[in-house]
Image 1 (cartoon, rainbow over the protein chains, first blue to last red):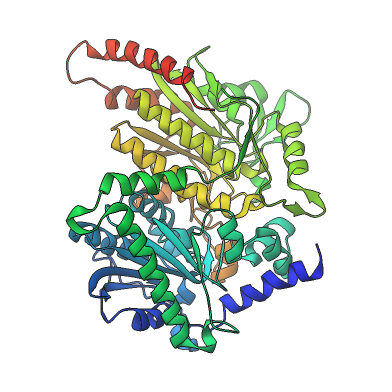
Image 2 (image 1 turned 30 degrees about the horizontal axis):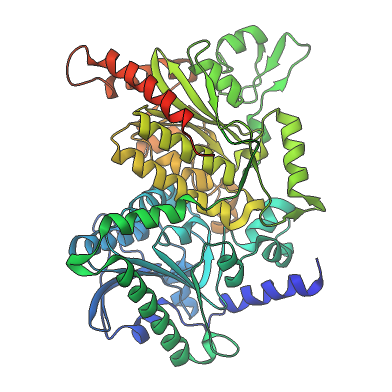
Length: 281
Length: 300
C-alpha cells in the first residue's frame, strides 16, 4: 500500500474526530426551526451520550435522535465521548416508537466511536439493547434517514443507523470497529491504526461505492468545523432532498405506502454482503 | 475478538486421558466424551465444533446441510500481515475442514423438524462476515416460509475485520431476518455458548424468543480485555457469565450441555403445539412438503 493510500484515510479519520467539528446538537440547532429535547428511556436513566427530541423541519414535525459528544473535558466525560449505554439506545427506541405512532419521519445523527464498553453497560444488556433497535428499526412504518456526521463506529453506531437512506458527511467515517480496535485485534498493536483505517475502507466514497451510503454531503473547505453555517445549510439541503425523494416514491402522511416503504428498506439490507457460491442451488 | 486459550481442554498424558482446563482434573477421555465434553468434576464446558454440536442435538441421520459451498469473497481486498484475506480463509478451511464459521441446515430434534444454525469458534473465531450473515438470514427466511422453528447455537469473537462495513451490516441483515421470522410467528430459540461476544451477541444471538446459555460461557458485547483496558477496572471472573446474565434478566435459563437436547425438544414441543388436537402431525407433513418445494425453487 502506498504511503498516500494510507495517509489519506487516516487524515479523514482525524477530521471526523476533530472536537471542533459540529456535534448532533449543533446541527439540530442549525437544521430545525424548533426543537424540544426529550429525556430518558423512562425505564432506568437518561443517557447523555444520546440526545433526541421532537423538531420541526421546514414546517414538518420530525423525531430526531443522535449521539452527542462533548467539547470541554467535563462535557466529554459527562457525554461519555458519545459512547452510549443500553438506556441511551432504549431512549432512542422510545422516541422512534413514538414517531411511528404519530407518523413522524425519523432523522438520526451518528457520531460515536462505538457503544460504551463498561461492565455497567454489559449488566444492563448492551447487546440486547442494540439488537432490539436493529430489529425494530427495520419495521418502523415511517420514513427514516440516518446521517453520519463524524465517526460511525461499530454496532454502537448501527444501533441508531438502520434507515431508508444513509447520508455521510464528506469527512465522516463508518466502520465495523475503530481503526485502533481493528489494529489491536488483527495485529495486536493499536499504533497501526492508520494502516487499519486504509484497509477497512471507511471513508464516505468507500461507503457509497459499497452501496451502504446513498449520498455524500459536501463540507466546507478544510472540514465542517471551518464554517458551521455552511455545513449546517448543506446538511439541511441534503436532508430535505432525501425526504422529498422518499415522499415522491412512497407518499406522505396518510398517503404513505407503508408496505412499499418497508419492503424497500428490507431489500436494502437484505442485499448487503458479498459471497461466492459454488453453483446455483 | 476474544483470545482465551484457558477454555480449551488440553491433551493429557496419553490418548486415554484429558485434563480439564479449569479444575485441571485428569479425566478418562471416554467419560469426558460421554459427558458431552464437559468436566464431570467441575462441569466446565469445553468448546466443541459445529459438527460435534449437531451430532449432540440432531436425531441420528436427520441432519441435512443447506447452503453448502457458499464461500467468502474479498470485497475490500483486505491484507493482514502480508497475507491476503482469501489465503487466510483457505488456511482456516484447511485447519477446520469447514468452508465458513457456521453450519446451517435442517434436522429433527427429538422428532421435531427444526432448522439449525451452529457457529464454530475454530473458524476465524466464529467472526461474522457476509457468509455467516447470509446463512443465518437464509435459514430464518426458510424457517419463516416453512413454519419450521429456528434453533441458533451461537458463539463468536465478534466482527470479521477483513470484511469491514459488510461485516457490520450483517448485524442489520440478520436482525431484519429474525424480525420477519417473528412476523411469521415462527419461534426462534437461541443458545449462547462460549464465547458469544460482539456483533453476534448484539444481533441474532440476543433476538431469540427464548435465550438459553451454557454454564460458564463468556457472553457479552464488549470482551473483558476491552472493558478492562477502557475502564481500567478489574472484572470479577464471573462478570460476563450466564449465571450473572440470568440474574440481570437477559436470558431465560442456564442449561447444562447434557440437558440441551431435551430442553430444546421440550421447547419445540410447547411452542409448536397446534391449536386443534391431532393437527400437529398433518402440519408436520405439510411442512416437509413445503420445505421440499421451497428448496427446489430457491433462487441462486
